[in-house]
Amino acid sequence: MVRPRVFMDFTVGDEPHGRVIFELFSDTAPKTCENFRSLCTGEMGTSASGYALYYKDSIIHRSIKDFMIQGGDFSKRNGTGGESIYGGTFSDEDLHRPLDSPALLCMANKGPDTNGSQFFITLRECPHLNGKHVVFGKIVKGFEDVIQRLAEVPVDQKDRPTKPIVIVNCGELELRKRKETDPEHSTNSRKSKKSRSRREHSTEGNRPKRKKRDNDEKVKTEDPDLKGAERKETEEEYDARLEREEAQRLEEERRRALTQIRETYQDSTQGGVRYKGRGRMKYVDPEHHQS
Image 1 (cartoon, one colour):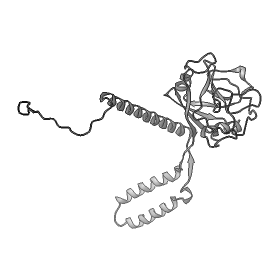
Image 2: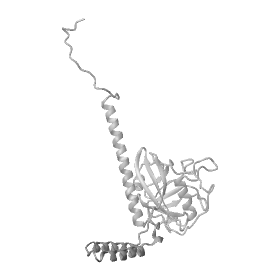
Image 3: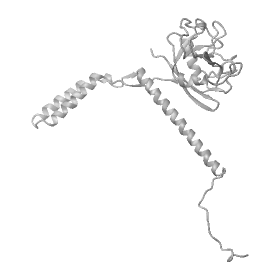
Image 4: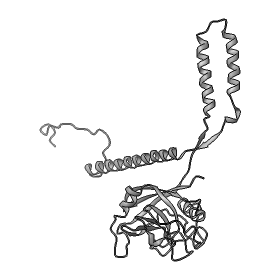
């Protein structure tokens, strides 16, 4: 069973701070994971209370250094709101998994069976919370270079970040499929190519007979059941693709930033005025053009 993966893109103020990718423990906490996944995609629309069931544009409203950061309150944005896709709150699942490391994704609550939409990410092991909060995922990319940097943002006396930490984008990552390549079929194809190569150097008398035999080989090696067969990406291929897509996204952000800087510089050097046309310059002798 392939566990689902979701992502969140963060900004601090107006500055992009990168992407975090979570792997969800759907095998042990399916209801909790489906709630979080749906809130990342926004596919459930609006709730009965009129709020969008969507983490996008919500904030990290609580940050305690060397402990955790907390978010998911998309309704009141202060830690007192939020709701699940099931309406209100829902029951705990799998309280046996310990909070024994950093980078764990856990449900915030107000007591037993009060899970809504708020979540927190551990910055260290939290054994005092074992059995009280559902651990339903972990960070597979972006903990050190994103989450730990977010945890460095200054906070006020109520542990609220002094600069808004916003989830500007979020969603689900999907495994892509590609056609299955059968090793035996590939081997037979290579053998057929070698056979054809040898026939090109054979005598004219043997050529017709060997061509028929080669055609028979091709018919045998072609398996119609292999056409259109597909398989899922391996975990290594999946991670490699995610890294490529992240690098492309960062490069695109860098290009947009450079373009904006260049346009701002051009406007400032021209006083905000753009001149068009070649203009006309001509020397006029004042002695010959007196009024």
